[in-house]
Amino acid sequence: MAGTWNKREREQKKQSAKKKKEEKRLERKENSLKGKGLDDMIAYVDEYGNLSDTPPDKNAKPSETIIPPTVANSNALQQQEDPSRKGVITFFDSGKGYGFIKDAQTQESIFVHVNSSAVELKEGLKVSFEVQRGPRGLAAVNIGLA
Image 1 (cartoon, one colour):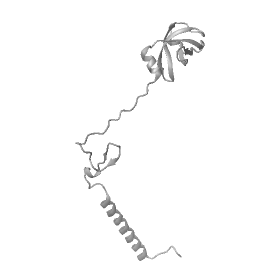
Image 2: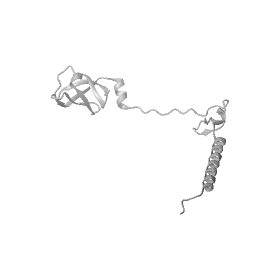
Image 3: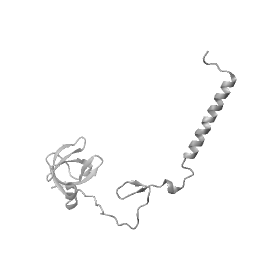
Image 4: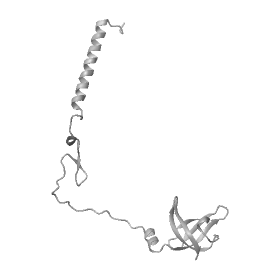
């Protein structure tokens, strides 16, 4: 039978397992970061975004200051200049109370709800309105006759 051992062999196996376990514990203790100071664990970032062990030179002048380009949104510029827009109601469902206005200048379709208007809305009606960002996109508010 291959699985049987006598008492002495079992004790030797236990002792060797304890010894290996103790060696591993000592090795982990030697390699741990607990005993090291804060200075050993700090990493610095240089002006190019690379990590280094040395702190940056405080006397060195920074090279160029990089300013990221800004992209102008044409719709945002139009809204800032003139918040009032004009358009035609292309679709309106009076049963559900919503529809769409086609902006006369940008030709984009903008959502409109009956609650944002004091005027009775219907298809083909020329209106003036302002635009706000809604939860699902642009929405027309302050709707009046053009």
